[in-house]
Amino acid sequence: MINPYIYIDDSGSPGMEHIHPAYPASTKLYAAVIIKSSEKRKIEKKLYQELNNIKKRHTGVKEFHAKYIYAGTKEFEGLADNERLDIIERIVHCYNEFRFPVICKAVSQEAVNASGYSESVLNDRIDNFKLGKAEDFALMSLIGECDKYIQRYQNRYGQDSAVKVIADEGRQKPGTKQSVPYSADKIKEIEYADSEDEILLQFADFFAFIINRCQINFGKEQSGFDKAFMKIIGKINYNMHNDFIKMPYDNLEKMKKEDYLEYIKKLQKSKKSEEPLAKQLVVKTNRLYDEIETIKKYLDDSNMNYPKKNG
Image (cartoon, rainbow, N blue to C red; front, side, top):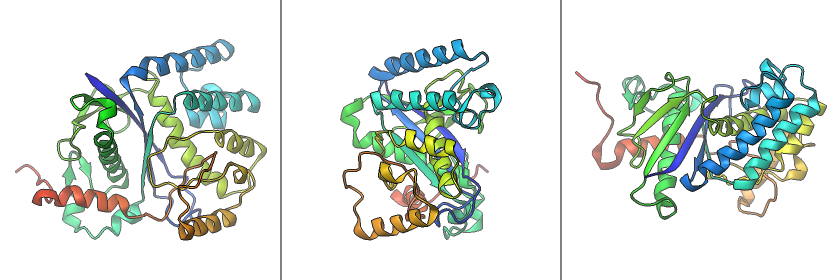
């Protein structure tokens, strides 16, 4: 029996320097949503209902693609601001109804370069992940985090259950698989699919997008649309399992970059990461090298070091 299903999509960094010292422009981010098998059909049904309602009003829409919804491009070109914001709010409502776990991992190329690994190790591969590439490091780290989560809550999913991981195409063609014998214990492989065919991948795309979009909005003068977007995503009741800082909803619209950085410093000093914040926003914080240390642990456990190339 498969339980749970894990859906993964990626998003590059905003490409803006000095927004946050731990989130440079080279950052590559992956987001995973973890779905219990007993809830999978209910969530899919809800999303398809919303998507079909949108299709009836707007010809040409094929899927919830957050980037295009936000920008009003591709099949969402011509939609008024309030129409696109309404779509985003409907996705938020869908998530809040189920509150399934979300895990994100972001790794910058600077972190990889400063990892202390030799050039030969960074040029080698583990499970077809090249350690020297930020995007490979991020995905490998995310697989490890998801695996640890499943093991931590295995009573919730069943100790003998198999885990199915589906990632959006990009690294590999739809329908192909990637074996991951070294990167995890419960997770054995990654299947690649087209997000148009796997509607739950569109939830992963949504979370990856909003994290990066918020970085952009904090680093610039916000438009009216930006502010309305920030207000809507401030309603998300996250079930996040990461080392991301939680932000108060009241601060989302008005916080400037300087205020944002100062808030992070204060929060790091006070360690109030568990204070009851009704509304949350996720951003990468001071654990810049956690991803590196996670991989090192995989490599060093049981004297494994790292797998050698064939031949």
